[in-house]
Image (cartoon, rainbow over all chains, first blue to last red; front, side, top):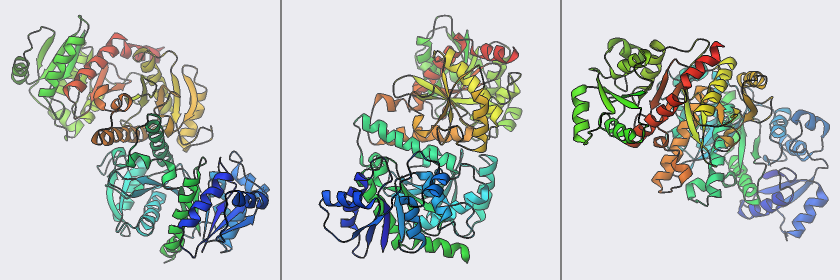
Length: 313
Length: 313
């Protein structure tokens, strides 16, 4: 099994990425390899500099880099040999089982749509975020920014995608699905969430527990939090800011430390023909390592294949 | 000046309300009176029990009570002598300069619309929430739940209402207005926030600084946070849950302690012909006291009159 990793993506690339790959390689099951994609001479020199002598990390050359501020579609068109384009090329060709990058989020999303593409039947692939729970473990929230506006039928698919991720990657049996809303009562919410509620209520493939509220993000009410990308993005960034403020105040706690994006590594793109994870721009070696391990779990649980089966049957 | 206070509203009413009134009375300027509205015999007995011997707290009889779970419109129609109906009656008649209640939120909102009514020109009155800032002070966020869906022109009015509150009640000179969004760039967001951005950008009566993100709720980027009630409600309840989790973990800090709803007392209803504040259902005496002091600031700054002038000119 091969996990492709963009060596050039992220604010601290390539150094932090190469270090993260070395950390991850030690923890991956034996049959896994990491394909570090980037400028070959630079990446190889760093591997040497960091004393890597193993054989499980391979380097794949990519001569171009998509910068953080670039326009996704334009950059992908103009830079066919960029690490992101090459990574998706490997994923599409089956030469990699997962692709991870802490680079340009938009390019990662557009790249997925251009290469492996959305699974047939999926209205809108989603970027999901992992949410730590007070009582331990993680829940999954989607969407967290790929789709600002979401129609009710799109929200319904998010519930399905999230349930599959929660079951097979987070190992949660019969994951509880909650619809983020401003009140628990069925009739509460926007026109859109009210309509979504009606769809979720009758969906037999998920375990819908009803509306949840802002106070339920971190408790055990729901394992899968369904919301549009506008809302999920605000929740995620607000949680990050809470971590930053606590950190600034030197207030530490195992639960709140999980708000640190480093803890889980990245945000999976769900609903595409392949396993892809987007890392935080400021990813450190620890974050990169955790992103690779997360991708490994996605590969091991056959996630992308499960999505495909779910929508082709 | 008279501040009417619903003695029967809230989970700990009437005891907590009467205690809160006694606390507030000591801190109010001399020319202020508190009108405690509720079952006269019960309220008077409590005042006596708590040793109140002053003359600034008066009791106004109201024989009925709207319970927390009641349907707002139905309850107000069926209970014309409820403390909420009587309170708004006093406000409308000019016999009270402000009205506060920790009771049924829906009834407080509907009661305002039935009695003092929305200011002419106001599309949708708003319930606003106060947001503590890391560097001290408070910002104001609106809407926090009265209007789940908000058209761009409604969001624009929220920016105006919030700016007036921030200027005159929070004493912030030239308050900065931020539009809650999933990215800073102008083109980011839902169809609705994109349209709102264009309106806010050309509004000469406010100091619009652009889009803000979930990570900016508690920093100094914006004094006035504009969002629909769905979003604001989620942000507010999530902040409350953070306080609860920290409290549970016995992690205390002056900034995070302000997440406790007690600190500021209540959520003002903005855009109506009168000053009204809604308290949290679980309001303690401290919360009630702070709500009364907040109402006093609204009265002293002529808030409702300023709104009226703003839209009649």
